[in-house]
Image (cartoon, rainbow, N blue to C red; front, side, top):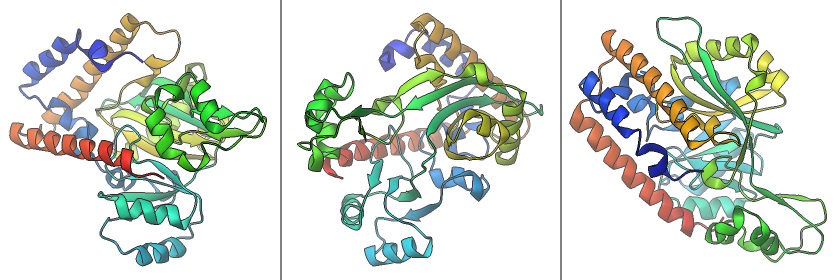
Length: 337
């Protein structure tokens, strides 16, 4: 993946031009009226899930760091949770503090050291994880799918001889993240992984956590678009990316055997540019095309009663989001689960 500055520095004047044309640094804030700040950054996952029918996302409960652990245990029982499951911050970023929890001791440790609101979510076992980038102009019934990719978790396969640490050090991506790997797999680093057995290094399927992307756009058709149009109409979602687990592409197209892990609004990258075959120049063209759409959607919503955020409000919100990110980065290194 290209460094952030390389990805955006040369084309940043175009973003500034949209700010000038709109008269607001936060023109994007009106893009998705049902998401805080248009979904650029810092929006809670709870806000997103509340826009979806319950059958469309994993079973979820919301936890405050102030909650008593015994009360959490009762809530788990009442909601029918069984280990293992997933925990992640309600307001998260980059897969930080995303953990698979295997037993009560791990959950207790996570809860004791985690300073932010978080969610407990069932571990979805569908084999395929995908991202779908979607947008729809508010005055139109049909939207557009611009990207469709498969996301493969960072993993290793045992050879019956090497320890997990040796396998990590031989992995092209994981070996560059030794501190993270030690934190997450401290108990298993010297374990010999049986031959052919898969060991998942992280359950967060994003680039920041070493996932691999492959292009699936050839599978996009009218049936798939119809399904995402229906979901997006219900959520009043106009621009962003869906992250989904499903049994198969055909099932997703038919609207069955899938679950929405989350959807990201105006801050979502069209991450299909990160699979093999895209040059940096190709990526620039994709980014600029999507920024134009984002500007047009935001402008339309502004003209129809959804105001841009005021300057000071947006600035304070971004500063709070930055502080939250710094806290997550710090705690991600300290919570050894």
